Length: 348
Image (cartoon, rainbow, N blue to C red; front, side, top):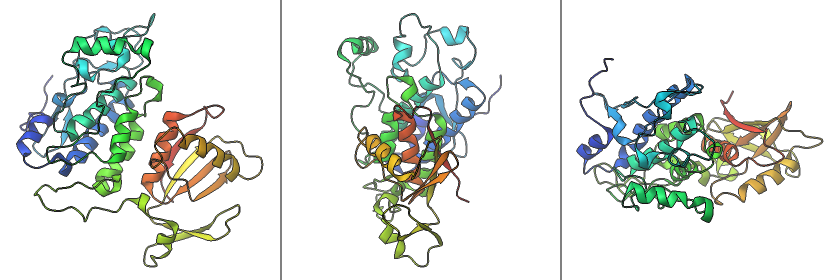
């Protein structure tokens, strides 16, 4: 096998060479490259198996590329020598790989890749802080994880929000996304497509779109010109912007006033969802219950709920709110809506 030469080395080496530039200046672009690469692998039914900072290489154009496929395996392959070996980067490995459940074989999966991807998000933002650094050795780490069945305490690879070397905290939404990867139950972790949507949108719109401004830019200057978070806008704010292309829709229920949407509005297709009369009432009850399992400022209620055959169209004031809802729902689904899915759709 012949691979292109990567002159800039690993992502971690690249970040050190950029010092004193804080990672906030380019971390989202690197993470966008990483998640796109992993999305491709998963789309062709391949798991990487050993995703970590040192296995991400930089090409001559400064783009991050996934490397070191020595532990990669096909997702649907029941028996694989590579998949069964327990070698790998211990601190980036999901709990089910370090301590496989009884009577279940050791097997790398898409979900174990997602755990590692959450670690990489924190590792890149912090410019090299390894997962579980509060445990002195790998042996101590495994012992701590083994106590989960008795204590039900989930040890997190990053207990606190990472900061880069310039003191910039990881944006709130990226931090919540990384934390959702650290669910001990593999099925509760987000998919790579969901992560690619959110990280890709943030990378394309700047740090402000993720809810936290950095305290310093790459050259030490203020970055208060970052984009305003869409969660800070209200319907009234939108109505005060006559020059912004928009469309109008009439909300159902008690509020009959027209709602104005930005051209950057977001839509989630939610379903299948049985509706007898009006969709607002059952969805409102569902939304309130979902809001109880996440931090209060994570979710924003849609401005409009419309019936679309056996699905609902949820109209949000911005794409970020739509992505947040879709990701949160897919991670925290509950009875009797376990078959209901949420997917962000492109605006017409």
